[in-house]
Length: 141
Image 1 (cartoon, one colour):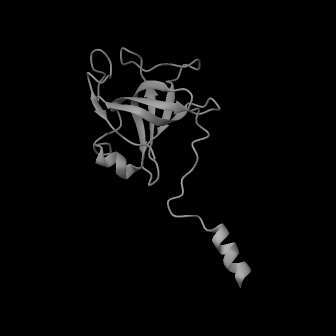
Image 2 (cartoon, helix red, strand yellow):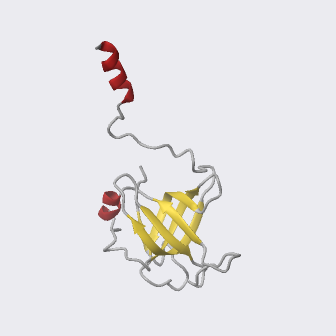
Image 3 (cartoon, one colour):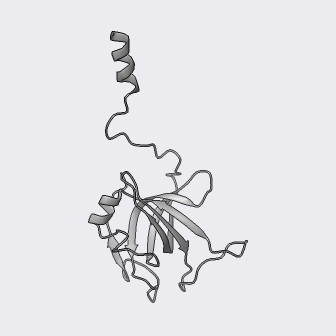
């Protein structure tokens, strides 16, 4: 009986458990501006998939001739909604600038850190910056 209780205690996942951010290179950051192509809500973390935009608002194109696509892991969908970002308030086509820790393995995905700037559905003159958009404080934890 004691062995079964010990086994159960050791194999139970604690409520509030959280994954490691070790897969992200937290020694460097990237700041990217993009146009949202997909919002993936999640209870632990939401994800924003976006086409990277150049300074003039046109999609950056990779060597394959296709738009460069990145993704970013954010705070939970509930936290994002409280900060004004939900599929309703932040529809596909929205322009934003995000600072992220990139994946260590080089794939085009990262974890949000620092600034998140929401700029509407078109690239503002001068780019999507703190001066031209709405800066949101979103904790990623």
